[in-house]
Amino acid sequence: MRTILKLGLLASIALFLACSASSKTTATPEEIAAMEKMISNKQFEIQAQWAQPMATQSLNSIANSGLLPPGSTASQIDISGTGGYFRMVGDSVMADLPFFGERRMGGYYNQNKTGIIFAGIPKDLSFSPNKKGVGQTMRFTISEKSEGFQVIVQLYPNGTARLTVSSTHRTNMWYQGNLSEYKEE
Image (cartoon, rainbow, N blue to C red; front, side):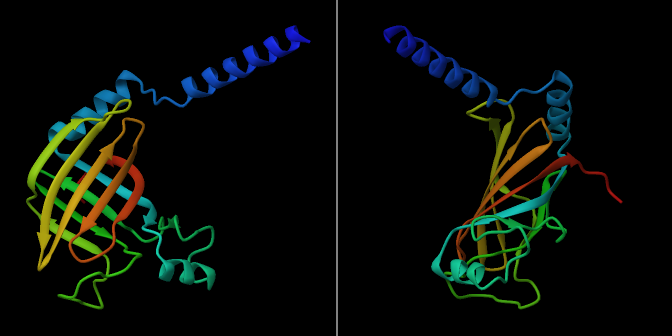
């Protein structure tokens, strides 16, 4: 009986270690070099695929009424067909991302531009290595009209990215998307 317990415990530990080791992000030297080149050239784009709004009662009500796109939930919305993007071109950044959340403060409102939209030269721009695994973290602030944004962009060599956008007027939003080199059209 003790042998079976020891073998079961040993198998559980081995399974735990195998699962935790496989979750680490690995990247080839070519992928890392390509990502580093995009960052040093300041020429990259993120095509947003998923929006992750802050869960609120009103957003849950919208999700329960069936108004979100198919395959979406209140915590993860498929935005792959919206054309939402974030770009860095030289010293400028620009974004046009759909917004699903609550406006927390009054101010400028344009019914034709309800998303998170900004363009310009960011303030306090910095790049640093990601704390976990490979990749880079970009941080900056930028203002558009009366609204200010604090943005954190995590770039990964496997071609994915994660954006966190905090606004002075709205609830926080997170986005996931595909990272690629930006080529002007």
